[in-house]
Image (tube, rainbow over all chains, first blue to last red; front, side, top):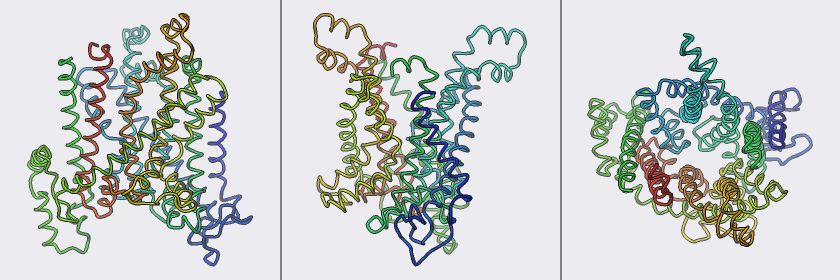
Length: 269
Length: 306
């Protein structure tokens, strides 16, 4: 494993493990209010301080990590599966199927990604489910284009022709012989996609279009902290730090994986 | 060349039609009755009926679609539900602010990215390269909705050097442009490095050095000049990042542009205005991509002849 991939996996592992084990090692929970000490800065008891309702920010940030990671996993999972199916069909069948899918992808790519997500959540209403749907709607296109390109290349290979000549079904040819060649590139895209999905969810929540209070989300926490920028900047600083760290971790991991599977990049880097 | 331009423009037509169709369908994705949603649950039934009629929602879907396309083609995007003013007029008032912010952010990005990318490429594999690229990756990872408030704390609140929000003087522009430009700078620095590395490996650069041209001159006079064609394209294509980022940056710094208008309109469920803003941003994005393609075709004969 190269340097960036190692750094990325360490950062991501720390956040994942902390988010999962938070209820067992934190002294307080994310909902307990200590109103007399509201907006208190970091102390030995509350490492990240207390928010405007006297809730422990560390506990809320780690609970927010669960939300962000869950959104990332679902969005990447749905987008990559949809992208594999659609991109695989588009590349393998070609002709009219490819043309129709290509035009739909062109239209979706004509929108700056986040803008379309904002539009969809704006009309469907702010909620975590709608955020996931919106991010998956814009997310699958990247995977489909990647898989389509790989399939177009792979379907010309002799072993694919041989499988077809032996009577293998289309699903078998795609599943056993064609799509596996796209898996390394998909893995890189999915890792970078996690960073993108987490950042987008936080941005939508920041704009008031994503996760709704009292469920903690990094974006919502940063937005809530803006009111107290002068008297309690820790409300904004800590959720943002963790968000930036996780996104950086996934970007490091994705970059490292890309270098690892592409020798040309490794040597030019 | 003319054939290339005509072909590329014709290819953009179905995309624009698709964009308009998607924007039209937005109001029909509202759960339940859009008119009821805009007026709220407590609205009188007569008011809901009247709003539905004024939005044309009582017409058959195809009639609504045809009317939407006809009006959009003539620049009529309907009337704002909140203010009663034409959507086009309200958007037109906000365009200068968004253009000003976008251009300033791109200038910030280029001023930071070009030296960073060049330094990283020239000293490839050294601590300088790793430092520059780690900085670039960090820049991509830091959300601008977090960076913006932090910049405001330091430069507006603590140091008092710059105004915290609003638009008017050059000072008002600095923090929003910096907040929006840094993420773009990070992307561009990586692209600059990659593009320059490709050029530095080309034979013509080695040939120039073999003829006695200094390393610095071969980089600035030969390799970097050729990289600029690709970089110019990338800068233009990143305009989408700037437009989307502007939605958030304008909200943070109370910058009176289209992005802020969009978020305010979402809050008021002013769907005609939301549709208008989305359509304008998407059409601008498609047009810039088209112009970039055409420009790339002019600069690089392989593209227009390919």
